[in-house]
Length: 97
Image (cartoon, rainbow, N blue to C red; front, side, top):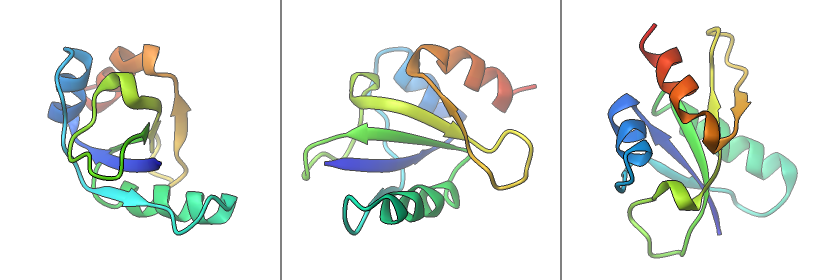
């Protein structure tokens, strides 16, 4: 299932370093595009980075291998920019200008 997990810089750093991370997890009500968007937006209320991850229903933590994309509000507008997992260092730099 797809989960949207809010992460702070510390959690994102753990993912980058190969460890697990835990954050507020939001699952969409359905696979409908609007429900997915709403779940991502809700997760964004809980942290500066939202990791879109494919996880098992019982997973409490995520790893970078499960993350499909990172989403960040880079300009304070509320619009989330998409970043590939390979850009984790770029996202960390955005959090620590």
